[in-house]
Length: 510
Image 1 (tube, rainbow, N blue to C red):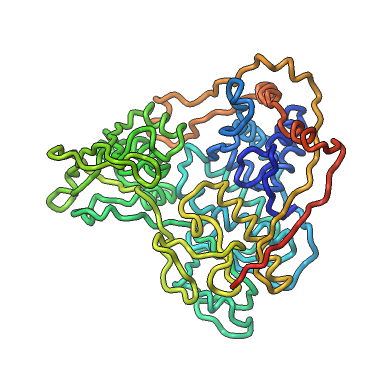
Image 2 (cartoon, rainbow, N blue to C red; image 1 turned 90 degrees about the horizontal axis):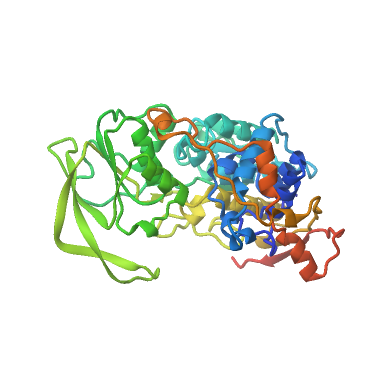
């Protein structure tokens, strides 16, 4: 149950290896508790991912080849609402173990790793720099996408696995890797204790990258991650009737722009160096920002912040498309003589994030500040593993969950054997038979989803997406083409089979 799952051919493209057809079939039959349990085997964040997941599974859904993909995320959202009526206590699946594990960072990767290790029987303590758990789920995704009571409910369930938590504790300030890995009998500075047998670094990427242009140190320039964090912690900027510019094309930029609009900005400009179709933010967020009146400026690059003291504007350089770069996209190049000044009161750069990790002995980092790890997610320091954005760079919640599962398995194997090895796990399968005639849903179409009107969104952070009712969700799940059953037939496996997990390990050379 706690092992990381390897994607079978029917599991679509979920990075966390969730058995999507399986739980959809259970929802279609009204077997909600079983559906949630199937989902949690691979991803404990049912409530969170029902609201804030990019739904990679929908991008690979076989139904999308016929008409439109099944509304998988909306179905998960429905499950989440059902779940909040029945708090979850994670089951213990292994006997208690003596080795203690420290997890540094309480975001999705850290919480997932801590949960899996606790279920395996290890005493686990999470050390979190912020005053609350959740990482970027809590201080990076605004409540209009992920309400705080929903996130907190999910975290409380995970902690019922027996995980200890110490918030307000920063690596390098309040404790070090040396202090955690020291013998428990040795006195430690900062009130921490040693005696941990392994450490998982899941510190995320909470530091905004600078623009590296003149004037960006002026008052009125606020890094995107810092801006969203202050909004989440209840200390938003006063943006009433101010002109705001946001630089970037990712999800942080989109959320910063939409948050600024909700805080009363008179106008919000989003400045992006490439074309509309090349924005890395997810389509739903871009479309919502456009509907809310965010003004987009494509093929535009800020080159200088102006103002005598406080920001008064930003000088921008219009771009043209040049030769193709290594990514296969045409590289933006300056259009000669096409500079203009955008009058602004506040500028929010959101062009990327870094780990902000400095000065920890034995840890090697790449140029982008992510940690160097081997195939088992072991760092260059013995007994220290890493997962999430600190390894991959800024990614999604579900990617972080996948690495949380993987690193927990790696730590467990290390503590049991003393060896750093990659574990490859092929899961068993279980079949949920059809209880209806799928031909009856050949002409069924994906429903439209209710949302708050634009007027209702202004001045508040109320959740924008509204859920579908039970009947609509069950009918939508019946549109699933059940590619898992096709896989069984192709592999000539009997439907009653459920083989045990097969695990093999590959030794990692240190």
